[in-house]
Image 1 (cartoon, rainbow, N blue to C red):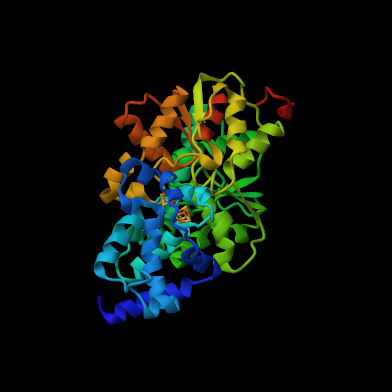
Image 2: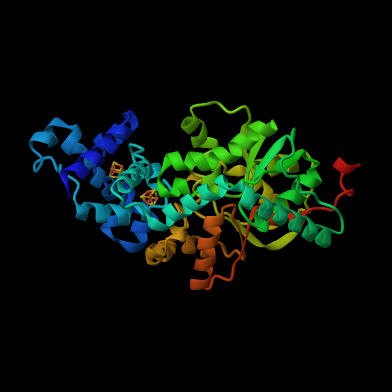
Length: 426
Ligand code: SF4
Ligand code: SF4
């Protein structure tokens, strides 16, 4: 690797070297407790997927350029320059990491290896080795947002078509308000009717003052590892939220989009937003608790289990609201073991479902999740993240699990007691 490129990579690392990252670089005890926490290592037993090994590659550069011992005695202190072999290994282990942070939960020092792999993505992008497909999807999203005069009418037509479908399905008007000034809620959905129609039914039933905008929740810039582009993608709906004067932004059933909006955006924008951000399941849980919507407690009689998507659960702190909802409408709910903070990643996060080159490790790394699901005996799996659903659908086919895998919103709509028949409507 040329000196100029090495200097560039060291410069990228230097720019990201805050106290937190320095601590992660300095304190790993090499206890290897994290190896039993990572679904990829557990399923493959391949050293490159061991969480501490992933981080070790960055540590080798760190020691060489950010510590005196590594600078002067590199062989003794395991310090080295980045080279092409290192970048190859870094690419494989970094883009395979789903960012689930199960390793962080089990690490005695809470070393956030997902944070370290985010740093690794920055290095890979600077070296021209960022994942191609994630890069293209990121740029496509930016292009779409920059060309709304072209895409806007197509998106608006899609909303109108969905309203027609809702009218046919429910025999009444269920509006999908677009860019409604003064709405209380800006609902940020994924592209596709599955993310919009159930929410429209629920908001309508609850009598919510809501709107949708032209901009969707998915953020490939986040998966790709480019915070500047990730911010630009999120800017679109955040700026709309400000322009429309909403009180809250509600993110659809999507893990990474929720974290981007709730946990990263204000830091990226260096600005406090004049509204709160909530996940749609937090809102629905409140609607049910407040009697604004009513669900039949015996609506779903099959055994139901719930998958905690890593970005919503372990990384987002939303554990009870989805369980409250599912328990309110199913007679036979069984939690997986372990669950909540300890839930196994399904193997489909971090954008890995979009990268064919990782298909083999992705499917294999679903083994712990398959065992968990099987042990519940459930035939319905409620799951509020699109990437998890894609992955578990594939696991369902590969392992013949016989599961119905559904977003929580769809179960709510399935179980909803028709308008006019519950106390809130009297
Ligand atoms: S569990 Fe933490 S301290 Fe132990 S090897 Fe893994 S990252 Fe290092
Ligand atoms: S964040 Fe998840 S996939 Fe990545 S190393 Fe940790 S446990 Fe493994």
